[in-house]
Length: 133
Image (cartoon, rainbow, N blue to C red):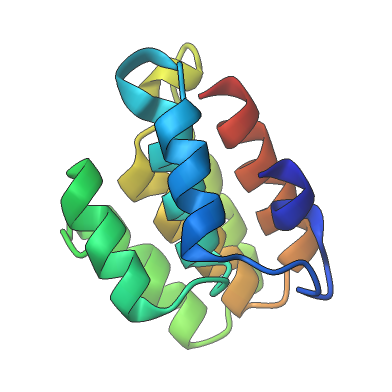
């Protein structure tokens, strides 16, 4: 999972079969690593919207849910304001531990960083989340 996320060129294939194997073998509490993997791959545009929807439903992610914060970070990415995306990403990551991170926040952080050209940072945060699941 981390090799796929770290792949800057997107050369490593991301198949449904590989994701299914990861999900089935996930021993993290409440399947958090799998949930973070789907959020990360979605944010990096490494899986199709159909797969995103299927896994989101299957794992109960609700990645389409919105809040004031998701709308703000999305709008900052839309207008290509990398500085504001970075600040909002930092705000979205506030918490005493990784247990406070949600797949919804991870998805929006990774997606927004990726959209404004901060791809390495997006991949780094995504890989860390999956590792800490």
